[in-house]
Length: 108
Image (cartoon, rainbow, N blue to C red):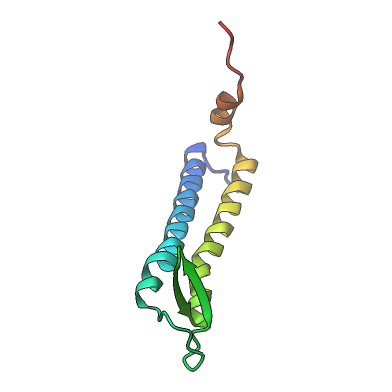
């Protein structure tokens, strides 16, 4: 099996990092913007809107499917982040950056 070049590995890690960021933004959009504008503000067990969400004092209610879909991007983003973290520990692509950052400053 041919090994990947350092540039390809860096691109893979950068892509995984970008996907993590997009998943996080997707969670924030669903949780704080989208459902806040379309979900009912009253508890309604007849329609299944029983999951209360408090967004800085603005209460709205989601059904089970909406509640699950809200946290789905967050879970996927966490899994992608862990994959990127494990690959970085194995490949050590950003080792030079970390070594530069961790060196103590030299006194005058």
